[in-house]
Length: 274
Length: 274
Image 1 (cartoon, each protein chain N blue to C red):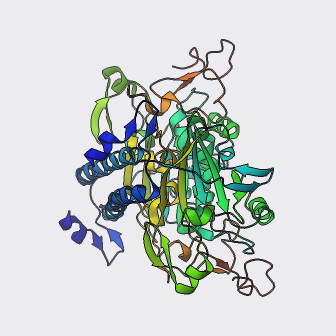
Image 2 (spheres, chains in turn blue, cyan):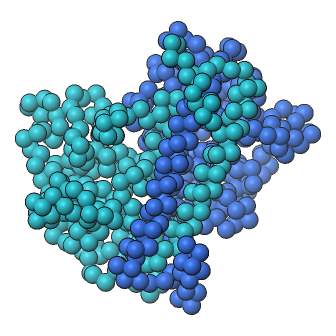
């Protein structure tokens, strides 16, 4: 493939090499072999993921939902598998992180289908339920979203950091000790409930581990320009916004918080960000 | 990993092996290494995909849209990149294929974002526009969907088959000669428009190449039971339904067409399908 990579771009016209359909098919078929290997490797890792051991959840976590208290067991909503999105939204933030909102925009579409395959979904954040509800209404989401305010849940699953950790600048995230400067980090955790009601933690993923559920990225990966994240942060904060903020002049900081440039804005202004 | 795979499942309880959090983290970190390799390989292939040559589109395709005739150029809707989803809805079908509807359920969510990254989307089907519009309304989709009725477009991009091909039982699909029994097959094609208005075909993908656009599958791949589709190759047709049909008794045939089991059903009954 190196030959192709080197010869493909014609900088004078900003075009890739232009070929006949017959020539294109020959190169496309070569590339298809690699794509099929990638698909098979994805299948293999999904299989290995399903064979990881489980950890029994012993702590009686309680969450605040719009309808009152929910145990972790309640969040399964009658199904045996539960995916928790650890949504970065700390007390007082007024709005959730932009990257988490980007992920969340894809959930209700998928939920119509996977709820018919024995999987429930819930977002969990540390913000009090009233703050969650108000942001959720603004974004028009329908998935279940509960508050872990005052609970150990976010700390036990390594997506919130204590004041002490932030002061030291070091915390445990994505299965490693890393630099932490913010209270919250994103992640996904998966649980299963057996017939006798025991709940087990089966999987967690952080960092780029949740990208494949963000179909906007998967569409962009098919295109000539790709994700094209060439701004200062080199990631989604360069261009992704809350879906109601694409035509606003604000920016997203490196931790995923939206910062308005409008002085009189009510939400997410620099003053209000912690 | 073979050791882990063999010892992990306890069939007596329907549980995987239960371990302490510390032990779990050790095994999870091993899988994480492989997951990171998969992410990097995906990045690498996305890069190679962008370096494929292009084919200039010479034919003046015309489509019928809700507001009149569209050229291929019009479908770019002011952006320079276009993804066409080849939606299996032949003339007279009344409703689209279940798998294509499954894909389409994910599009509007992703579109909110990727339209801000110079990418437009259009679904194209051979059914006349009135049939497309009626089904689109039922499904509540808002993406652009045009008819290629009477055009060569679907045949040139190898997603519709001629009567002759169906009679012979052989057609060109997914870059190979394969058995074909139906008029329509699914796929996605990507186009680029340069500053002078020239259009180039950059990429097409078919079959499992479309899976990564389905965040439902990507969520299920995290869950202990996975996609959990039968080994008989029926795939998504074993469980996926039009999102308004999950509670119905019908079934989906191997071509992705829904069949009602209610004799007096108005839609998608066996009698009506070809």
